[in-house]
Image 1 (cartoon, rainbow, N blue to C red):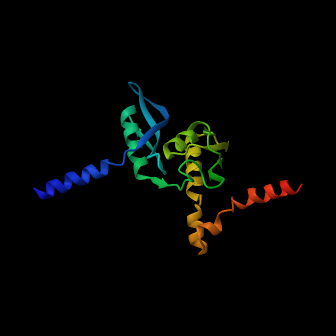
Image 2 (tube, rainbow, N blue to C red; image 1 turned 135 degrees about the horizontal axis):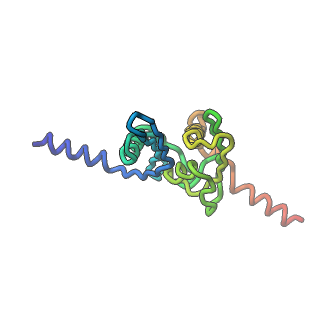
Image 3 (cartoon, rainbow, N blue to C red; image 1 turned 90 degrees about the vertical axis):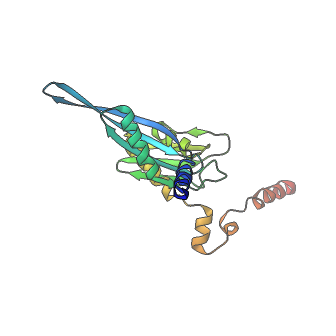
Length: 191
């Protein structure tokens, strides 16, 4: 009896993290056989918790819903965690590459929104980023664009990681924001 309750608790815990998913692309392929054509479908899905975790997956099947289900399952298995500044943007500008795909992602002030196209927008929305400016150069293939975006995001560094690696405090790593405006106001008063 206790074992059954433990199993139910574990199942509820596994289902607790609610993930949002976005279908990015669906590709139909056909195979010509003696009786006509057989169709297959390939789906590309991005999954995220909109709090800093994101992953993508691809699935192939004879029907669209089955391909989407397979892609979603794979995406949930291949998630990465990305450090966000103030929970809304990146800590610094990032470049990502995969094959011929190259993407540039820049931090943005609050209120900018997501300025990115196609598959990159889906990744940022599932990740929970609210302000970012991104540009894709090179390959327009959605698979390569998503891989390049995730490559860049996984290479991003948070100030906490940098400080820990250097053996310093986070305050020593970040630029002094309070001193710069004070100095400029003193210069204006003297003039």
